[in-house]
Length: 316
Image (cartoon, rainbow, N blue to C red; front, top):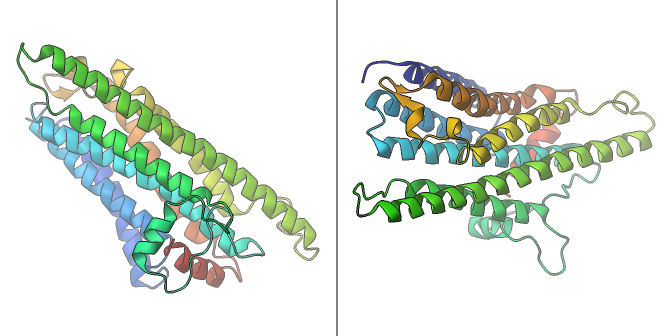
């Protein structure tokens, strides 16, 4: 198939994500950030989005006859959103550990030094351990994994159509089941995003209370920290992306699997506009803003504390 607008936009965002990756690699190279930092989560997200855009470019060029590329693009897109939501929570946890007087996060307790990686991984999925306080991130991680699994399973079901009249009814049932699984998964993502706003607002309130108790810290008593402001800006972007994903199985102009969204050149301009404005752009802006927190944490006396918190958060 000839070059088209879908291929152009896929290439554009491939370049934009490559720019973010280069920026991160430069920070790593100059030792401004370390592998054991919150930015490793963002780097992982960027790598997934690069793979997603490359697959989207291949699908745009190969045409709608190549369903395998479409399913791969769909799944990688879901993985990108999954990792981005997780990034936002990880950044908030690091902020807690860097700025609260206790140097602790009520979202997730610090893991013991030297703990084996498999215990850390399993511990991240456990919301409560007898004798310890509640671990909200245990719930978040568990529900994110469930939602991610439902979306992936629902997406892969669409690639197993029979393609003949005898299997028409089973195909319809498979499509309906896929729609339900994807909807439930996206709904869970949306609920987790709403919980993220509550966590950010609670953080800002707690920081305000602690600041007011410290008489010499009058400069930051009236306004939220710049990093929290960035997280507040990121939140509506994630919500728009989440609503788009939730509605896509039901709103025909948002649905990749509706024939009317294709013409002789591939995907229609209307569909492409929805996809890149409500989906890809929201994710790219969110990612760029999260990377921008490197500058908001460069206030005097804060950089070392944040870097130490990064090392602890990457272990959780």
